[in-house]
Image (cartoon, rainbow, N blue to C red; front, side, top):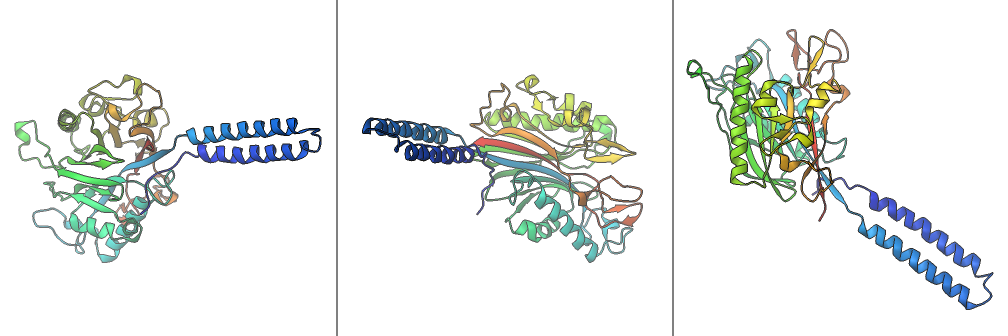
Length: 390
């Protein structure tokens, strides 16, 4: 089984330097011996060579090696099977529904999504990809089973975590994981609880909470799909407050556990749900004990990069944020534990519409009532974590 790591090749470079120094040393000994008038010079040359050799070996052996792990999230944009689920409003994704959702379209959708999911994280981790990927807009366990059975995911032995939720359309959150890299300990689905009495019948996605082991460390992943923009900001702020309680309880139970909140949050990093509800900070040195670090704030604000486009403007609704124990807050580059390294909005040409009215936008499954045989209206996101090899 392959392991999910990428070694920083400092040691390799020093080995290359060692070869050069040894070559020069041998050359010097060979050439100087013809000028040596007695054994004293030769002995000194041998001593010099031994010192150089031992010094280089010491430098090489002292180099540290690091492993890198990928954690991702990807909105699947209506990954429905072709069968009706009792009590769910999934009629548009039936063969007789408005999208004429048949076996051919479903098969193409599975193949497309599996391709993208398998590619996520491979810019830094070739042939390995992400250890964990959160998903939203997946109908049921049947669709997930069909998804991980697609060759690029099956080849890595990917498994899934899912609990059926109360959403009226039937779309749930889920999580894929590579069992050779991540071990599941516990799975729960705390519900979204309406705060207003008049919303007592409001049903939406819960907060899939997965405890597990990554790189021999205890972590927790909270996968979310917060209320849409058809609802006011209040409902996403409410979701943020509820997720914050879940996060705080996880840390109260185990302060060493590193918590990652991810999902289609239907808000940008600049919105109130993120800055106040979850208390996310955009700069590492400003993250307090009860805060979370959000690396995506500057990706959107300073770089203008997003995960979905609307009327020519980019939003960044897909985010992965983390607790302070997962960041190098002091800047001392101590990677003895899992530590945030970098983030990435994952792009491939095949994920982008290349022509027509929606050119430059994410290539989605349907647009304007037309089947585009695409992927999603969102782009995936990945964060990379680094840890020193023991």
